[in-house]
Amino acid sequence: MGENKLSMTERFLKVLTAPGEAFQAIVDDPRILWPGLIIIAISLLLIILAIPETKQFTAETLVASGQSPDQIALAMKFVVPGALIGTVLAMPMVWLVEAAILALYNQFSVGEARFKQLLAVAIFAGVPSIIKAVISTGLIKTMGYKAALQVSTSLAVFLNTANQTSFLYRLLGQIDLFSIWGLVLLILGGSLAMKKRVGGLAIYSGTIWLVYVVVMALLVKTPAV
Image (tube, rainbow, N blue to C red):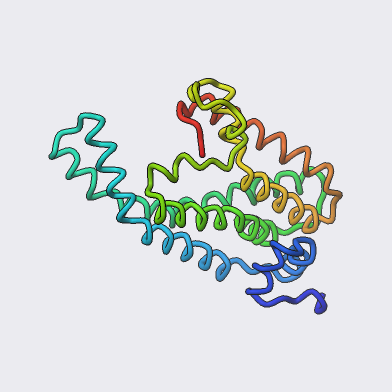
């Protein structure tokens, strides 16, 4: 166990360069508080950096929708607080849900993982989403919010954009490359924590993820980017 000890910086870096080694260290010595706070802090910083562009885009969208000046002024008051509070609340909820999904498989497969290990895995599996957020923020700052929205990292990029409201376009719009990357990390880390083969957990997690993708494609009328 001592051979797998890595510093916090090394854990974040090796999740990208040597995920097997990183998750073994995370499973051997699961840490939740500091990695979670670091990811949340980075997310909040990115939101703050994009505040001017976000407010401008929101105001333009509200004007285009026919909202009155009073309604726009009221809505604009909640743009920044809503984004900041939403991030602080949403990210831990996502990690808890992912850990719970892994814990359910661990229970039925008689795995050896503890919930704290699975929660640590879920937190570090969120690193690709932070990388995507960094790229998106960079695009927003250089191109503007509206132009940045046209840059897609989903499979919808391979389809004609003429009919963005079609189910196929919305479905592929939910299949984001960074999400797939995060799912792979979640499966790898979960299998190490449970001391189970990757295949079974991959089928289980992949099925749940595909169901989620289909449901989102049915509910969301505009494609994800």
